[in-house]
Length: 154
Image (tube, rainbow, N blue to C red; front, side, top):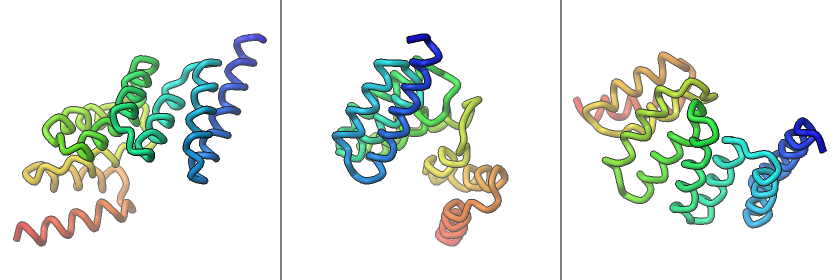
């Protein structure tokens, strides 16, 4: 197989894995993401495999996959945000902040508003919500969080 063929086959496996993940077929999704990675490693495949691990309660494995994703493509923002979210879930809020802030600076990120919403330090939260809404004024979750927090602080 030519390298382009490997890449195409890996993306096909990635799409199949994502479909399985969305159906809740996590073991099969992990298997397909792993096959995709073995054929042609991408930051997306590592990140989404990590996301699947998180659905299974395997947060340490999810974080490891995010670190692998960053090694493949340090400009891809999703794994930084995901590490932050997983650390929040583990109760490691101070450690999460560093990763969420890195996500806000990522060069390639489809949803750059997410890490701003995940930054939940009360003294920074309002500013983060403002930035999220500036990036995407229709981001309903950020608008509700901003309004709720502002009401709590008044």
